[in-house]
Each structure stands twice: as C-alpha cells, then as structure tokens.
Amino acid sequence: MSARTENPPLRKTTRLRRLLDSPRTEFILEAHNGLSARIVEEAGFPGIWASGLALSAQFGVRDNNEASWTQVVDMLEFMSDATSIPILLDGDTGYGNFNNLRRLVQKLEQRGIAGVCIEDKLFPKTNSFIDGERQPLAEVEEFCGKIRAGKDAQTDPDFCIVARVEALIAGWGLDEALRRAEAYRRAGADAILIHSKQSRPDEVLAFAERWAGRAPLVIVPTKYYSTPTEVFRRAGVSLVIWANHLIRAAARAMQEAARTIRETESLLEVEDRIVPVKEIFRLQGAEELAEAERRYLAGRGRDTRAVILGASRGEALDGLTESLPKVMLPVAGKPLLQRLVETFKRQQVNDLTVVTGYRADRVQVGGVRRVENPDYDEHGELASLACAADALRDDVIVTYGDLLIRGYILDDLLDADAPLTLVADTRLPPRDDPQWRDLLWCTARPETPWPGRARAVAIQSRLHESPSEPPAARWIGMLRARGAGVTWLVESLGRLRRRTDFARLGLPDLLACVLAEGHPVEVQLIHGHWMDVNRAEDLLRAADFARDLPAEWR
Image 1: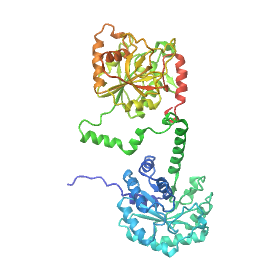
Image 2: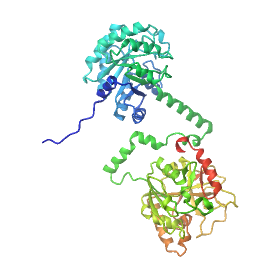
Image 3: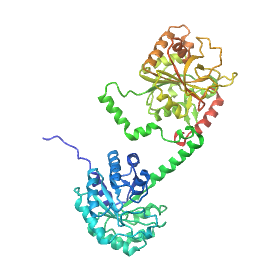
Image 4: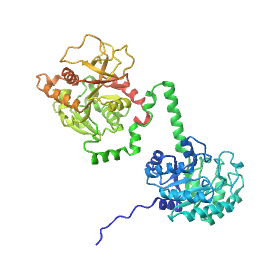
C-alpha cells in the first residue's frame, strides 16, 4: 500500500479563478514590491493587485508606460517569490499589440503570476484619472483579437485575463460599455472590470444591473470610496480591488519622516514612530535565514538573552508595594515589568529570565522564565544575579527591572560589539538628590562634543574610592556582555561571593571589580529618554513618560 500523501496546495492561478468565481464578493489589495506584497498577505487578503500606478510610482516614473514591461515583470518576480497568494497584474494595454500580450502571458506564467488585466485603450496608456475623457479607446475587434491571442498563449488553463472597459471613463456611455464588455466576454475574457471616475457608484451599479452576472464583475472604487461595501455585495460584484492605497500610505509616511528628520536634524522624533529595523528583517525573512545558518553553519545564529532583576520590594514606595513587588506597579495601565519585557521583545530579545523575590507570586508576566531569590530581604542585587547564573553566557543583557527606556537605547546596545558595554546618562541629577548614585567616570568629558561612546574609567562603589574629578555620567542599570565580557562578569561575581559583605553588594560593585582587573568596558552614552522608579513621585513621571511613547507601545 502506498503511503498516504496530502493534497498539494492549489496553484495561484486556480486560487485567483476561485476568487473571481466565488459566490460572495472578494477583496484584494494593491502592492508594488516584494515587501508590500508580503504585508498584504500577512494582513489576510486572499490576493494582490499589482497596480500599474503603484509600480510606476515606486520606480519614480509616470503611469504612462514609462517603465518597460520587462522592468514590471522583474518586480513581479520578487512579489511572487515573497508570497503564496495569487497576483493579478494591472497590465495596462498589454504593452503593445496582440503579439506583445502573447509574450507577456508567457512570462507571467513563468513567474507564477495568476492573471493579467488589460484595458481597451491605446499604447502607450495614460492613467484613467488624468483627462480620461480625452483618451482614445481601442477598436473593439482589435481588442478582442488581443484577448484571443492572450488566451491562446497561456498554458495553464486557470490563468485569468480580465478585460477592463474604459468606456465610462472616456465618456462614451453605458450602452457602449455594455457592448464592449459583451464582445470581450465572447472573445474569452475571464472577467470584466468596469471602471469609473465618478465620486458616486451610480453608473457602475447601473452597469452591474444590466450586466446581470454574465461573467465575473470586477470594480475599482478609488473615486467612490465612501460607498458602503454592502452596496457592492447586493450588486453582485465578484471582486473589489483596493487599487493604490499602500503606495499612497507609504508616500505620506515617508514624507512625514523625511520632513521631521530634516527639521530636527535628529532621529529621536521618528525612531519610536516607525517600525524597528528588526521588523524589516522579519518581513525579509531573516528568521528563516538565521535558522538555516544554525542548521548549516556551525556556531552561527546565537541569540541575545536578558536577565531582569526584580526581587526587591522598593521600600521607599511605602504602602504602594505592600501587596505588589515594585516591578509590578502599574504605569499607565501596564506593570513596569510588562513594559520592559515588551521593549525587549520588540527588539526580538525573547529569551528573558526574571529574578523574583518579594511577593514572587504576584509577578505575572508572560513570555519569561522566572527564578526566585528566596533571601531577597537579606541579600541584594548580586545575590539575585547569582540566582540566574545559568543565563550568564554567550550574549546577555543584565538590567534592573524598574527601567523605562526609549526603544533606540536598547537598539543601540544590541548594535554594540564590545565585550562589555554599559548604558550611562550624561544628564547628572543635583548633588543633593537621592538619585546621585551609580556615578560613572569615563573618557568623555562634559565639554567634549557629543561622543556617543566612551571607555569607562571608574564607577561609584562601596569597594573603591571614587575619583576626585566630577563624574561624566550616571549608569542607568543596564549592561550587555558578550563572549569575554561574560567571563569577566562571572569571574568577578565568583570573587565577590567569597567576601563577608557580599549580601550588601550591588551591580556597581561588580562592575568596579571588573574595572579593577583592568578589563576594557565601553560606555554607550545617552542624554535622557529613560527613567527608573524608586519613589512615589516617580510613578507620576513614569505615566507621563509612557504616554509620550507611540500609541503602539503604550
């Protein structure tokens, strides 16, 4: 007996034909390159409209056949490779006469394109919304011959040719539109697209009523966009094309980002309002490549992990932490720890270990591994870090659990290539402020132009006397160790655990020990855009901080 096999997936051509023949109204969305095509598929659309206007625009040329058909087909190949859903090409007039269309159909089939829509205007075409009534139409018989040639050229029986009727656009009236549509149907067109530039759907609905379902009917409601979709369903429309909205959305977003960057001469105002670079990597399929590297290239593809210290109660918060640990205090509707975890996950740091202690049972955040420091009330930060010693390997970020940061801070830290990197703020609090702690001395001086990165010299610690000169920055409680840097931390942690005062020591003492050994420690300098929560008034500031983030981060 032969082994049971699953049915092979439907060809893209078959899936497009089923959309056209569907008893219900279906919807497809415009895309103009591989990235936008993948976005359309991820949004759940069953098909893609490869818009002539959008394809021309992404090349930076006019919708007048200024992009050659070979350039269009090359882009379609990327779009087809990036997706599994069918693509219907807006093929203008077929890029020439019947012979051009025959060759176009052959090339589209070779690249897995499911169908082509051709319009009954003359080559080179002009966009229908630019003086459409002045544009001449092709002779009916000539266009019918083009349809027959295209159908004869296809080898896949389900490849679809949609005939687009421009009579309403050109002002030739409903009767002429119906006459042409019927001729095109008889010539072999698989569907009819009736086009209109009116702001109301009246003439399209009149066409649909008189067409009476003789063949699948396709519409493009770009101009009559306010029409309720139910109207199209009642009219028996087979397929609705949202024809140019991703290219228009992209243009608006790029204009705003470019203007903001130019005006501010900075990226700070846009970075948290656009997708992170890692989202582009995801859309490009970087994860699959990373998995392939792990499979085929030994020693490649290790991920960054993070250890979050969240064992303390936060005594200075008084009654606020009577029943909750500090990291679970709500900030604008979300616990502190939840916000920090989401920040890591947005940067694809998914291997997260949280060290709990006080009211460990109340630490309820998904997507993390929890380890407990049972002696949190007698032992401090270093004891908590020791509880997560198994996570101190390869490439690890260690951070306090009460931090709020802007996304670019973590992004920059992930770009660091030094063995050990600290994040420090050049804004120093007043000397009489309780936050006058975790002070850092480094090679950057206050009078130096913005340095970005520097080399650490010393950090405020119980174990060593601080330098006499003023500090340059304050460590925010976040570091990244890679390779040798992890070894330095682990070895220093081992030495400190043998001290009788180990229970009183914190992370700055560990870093001071590393520096005392002469190891190079890089500093990533920032200027604000973070905060920690230590006092009741900090919670109010934290809520304001969270509200300033983009909506998708709140």
